[in-house]
Amino acid sequence: MAGIKRHLMSWGTGGPGPAPSTGAATVVLESAGHLAATLGSDLVGPGSVVFAPGVADHAEDASGAVVVGYEGSLSEAGGECSLGSDFYLQIQNYGVSAYMSVVGPTLVRVADAMDLDAYRADAEQAGRSGDFPDFLTNPVIQLADLPALGADRTGSGPRHRLYADGDGFLSTAPGGTRLGVLGEDTLEALEARWLPLDDLLPGIAAADRAGLGRYLAAVAAVRGLRARGLTGVRVSGFGGRFGTAAASVPPREAADTTGARLPLLLRSGEETFVHDPASGRTFTLAPAAAALAEVLLAAGSVEAASAHADRTGLEQVAASFAETGISLGTAAGAPARARAAHTGDLVTAGC
Image 1: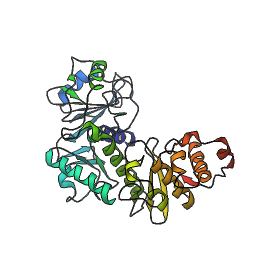
Image 2: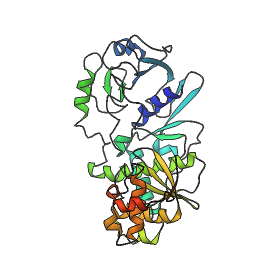
Image 3: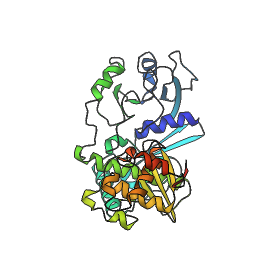
Image 4: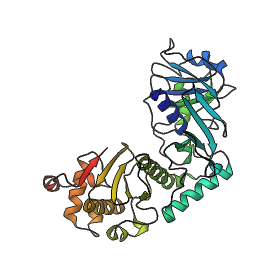
């Protein structure tokens, strides 16, 4: 069941999920009447998971796809989807979610102009004050269709997720751009039509993608720490900096205000962490290393950061992260002498 849930949630969020098979990784059908046509097409293959309403689960179809029955709706805000008697997923509009009680796993959709206004206002507020919406960083809540809201598009195309509405029109998600028709279009054709699309929601300019992508990465990082029981989580660059050295980097010159895959520095109480969105890893930092890592992220490179902090220490922190495969700005090119001096006590833990 855990693997099935991962397929469903990665389909809902549009974020990274199970690797696609020879067909799409995950397909959601609005109508069970389209199941036969789906299984007979190249849209699915070994490893694909197909969710269809009101049907019995199939461990594996002749195509190699796994068929999972569901009850309810995966497209209507305010509805609920259930997989058997073990898993229930609520679907809510963004605008009302701040006022709703959380009873279990919930997928929040930006479904209309009011939702979009609320989403943008929350992002702007987080940038100014560092305060993120409590509901959005709740570990049981996920924001739907992240690429349409500014997140990185990697892992969000037709080879990763597909949706067939009641009329058989195909898109990556409910409300998404129609890419083709079930029974008429191949997966390759759908992918070719999707690649050049600007799939941001109307009302979000392409120029806003980088900033909103950074915000969404921060939301996910805070949610991850909350899932580990940490509270009062703050993010460097949102509402200010933690240290005076990083604060001395002029905000207009800061290198970490955009970019969904650039590492983030977070603090909860006396603990400081670096989270790498690209790999999903989070590291606990010793205090001295945390201050230097923040300067590196803010300045964007050892060279630029050396105007604000000790260069030798910056090189050691850069080398420490380079050894884990993570670059803090352009720190992957840290000098060999800094690697040799590295003692391993800068990054104190990873998970």
